[in-house]
Image 1 (cartoon, helix red, strand yellow):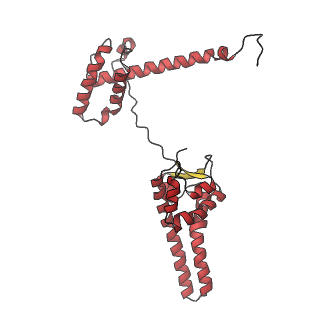
Image 2 (cartoon, one colour):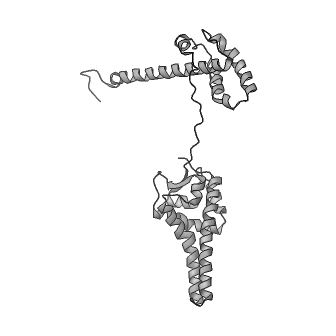
Image 3 (cartoon, one colour):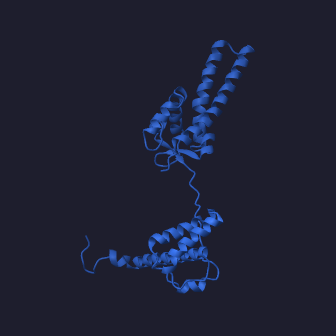
Length: 256
């Protein structure tokens, strides 16, 4: 469950209702022009104005939500989608319930009631969501910006015999963080931080490769990562082989 924040929901609602309001105003202007031209009497014109407001602020949002499976122009802009509480796509009943309640909590209270209700629950659900069994899901995941480091060229032979197991965990974490962030450092900062870390690393690396500090740190980080991955894979394979023996029973022993 990745609920959309109150701020993003508010931005999406503003965009949506500006569009819906523009449509309602256009319909009201059309009714007024027809009334002025004598094509409509006053009673019918008033009924059409009320119908235009209901159609533009209740029916149209419900149709849009249903047809787009929980999306709208505003939600496309903020990366949100209305879904059922179980994560499934909403239907017309859910969308209509949200639109009807939205007329109260968004239009008549200028969004105040929706904000208060959203702040009182942990998933930013407004009153319409609570009654319809829905919530707004954030569909934009943070982009993975991690750098996948590789062994520097020419150090393949060194990697086959090097011992980096004695490197303290705290130092290893700082080395890995440096490798991830070095591209964002200025050349002077990169050189200074690399030299400081390399001074901590060298006593625990044998043999030492004849490379500068940044390459040494990259090589150590890659070697530790690859060896830890290999060890975890071997452990998983061992557990998989032992699983039948661990879960089985001794022949002749009664099962419960």
